[in-house]
Image (cartoon, rainbow, N blue to C red; front, side, top):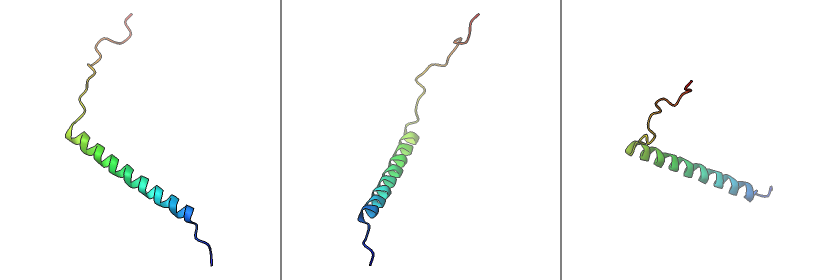
Length: 52
């Protein structure tokens, strides 16, 4: 009988866990963005072009 590859299984679990965390983080960030839309702190550039 073949010996189980525990390190492979562990790595797969770690990858799945990280993917789930990333999805959760992205979902939270999206919810924050919807609740608090980012304001534009920079004033519009007026006359910043090439002046000759």
